[in-house]
Length: 201
Image 1 (cartoon, rainbow, N blue to C red):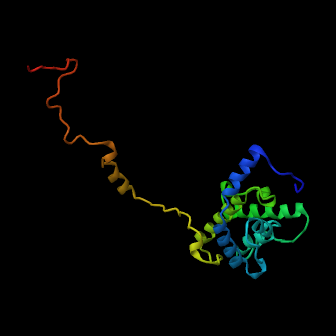
Image 2: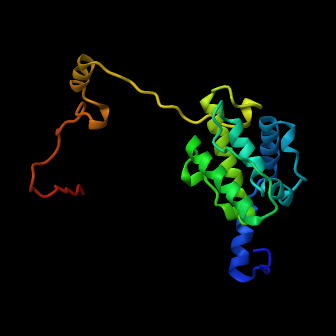
Image 3: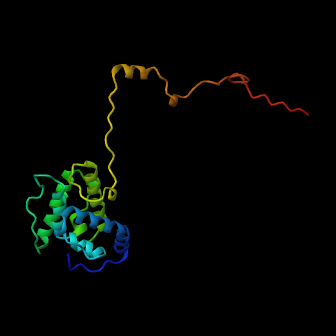
């Protein structure tokens, strides 16, 4: 889609809104992590949004990244550089499939065209952040880099109660039910009677 002309009107406004979501500071952190994770072979991008896109566009760096998070069997068997567009897009989609198997949710995933055509690089950042958070949370020794770069995801905290504890809990009245302490009908009139209004002259 290299021969696509400039956008005007509403499509231009929408693209501008998407572009504003891109975070240059986050870009620096992600570049640092990818370089720490993949080693010197990953190279480094030119600063700026287009440099970041061109660095990841062929899918090779992304494939090396996801492979570095596994011990033993790698999810992407063949990482090959190619100048052909469809090969680069295929490499990106292999990364996306591997990231989903790793645990990144579908809502955190970018589409291949978001990266390849540069339509939504903020979505690419979101996917890489989710991947980094998962890698830190798994704590399986594959993550390389500063632990503070990503937030740990919430872990399941199961609690097992015995039958005896469950029975004890049934006899407790929770405060959500309300309380009748302090309630009284003193001074109230009976149902159906009109309110007594007395004028004292």
